Amino acid sequence: MTDDDEAAFDDFLAARSTSLLRTAILVCGATPHDAEDLVQHALEKVYRNWPRIRRDNPEAYARKIVVNAAISRARRRKVIKEIMFARPPDTAADSPDLDLRDALIRELRRLPPRMRAVLVLRYWEDQSEQSTAALLGCSVGTVKSQAARGLARIREHMDMAEEVSR
Image 1 (cartoon, helix red, strand yellow):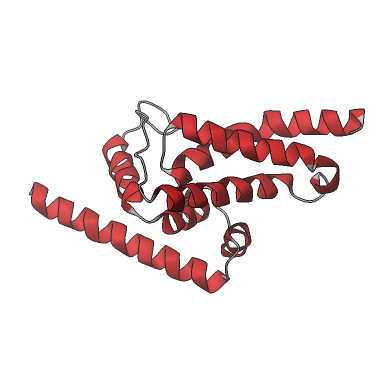
Image 2 (image 1 turned 180 degrees about the vertical axis):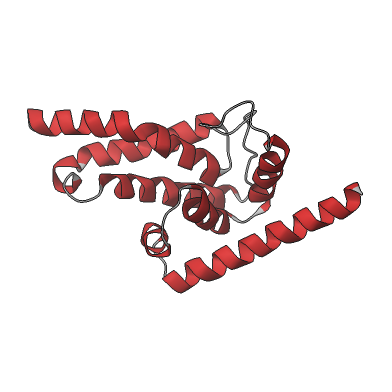
C-alpha cells in the first residue's frame, strides 16, 4: 500500500470507526466487546482491500461486513446476548426520552437478527431501502417487509406493555 493509501485509510478510520462500532452494538445485540471484535474484523478486511475499495464506498463495504458477521454469529449461536450498556453510544445522558429509548432498545433485542439489522440500518443509521438491501444482500422488497413486520412487532409489544402499566 502506498503512503497515500495509508493516510486515506487512517482518515477513514478516524472518521468512521465510531459509527461502525455503534452499528455493530445495535445490530449484533451482544456486548460491546463482541461488537468491537466485529468492527476489528471488518476493518482488517477493509485495510487488506483498501487500494481496491477506497474510491468506491469503503464505509458501506465495512458496514456490510459488520452486519453479515453479526447475522452469521447469531445464527451460529442461536442465542443472542443482550446489549450490555447503560445507554446507547452518542446519546446524551440527560435526554428526556430515556424510558422510551430504553423500551425501544429492549424491543429491538427481541427481534430476529436480520429483522433487527434492517430496522437499525433503516431507521437508526438512516440508510435508504436500496442501500439497506445492498448491505444485507437482499431485495428492496425484503427490506420493506422486514421493516414493516419489525415495526409492527415493536408497536404490538409496546402497546401491551402500556396496557399492563395502566
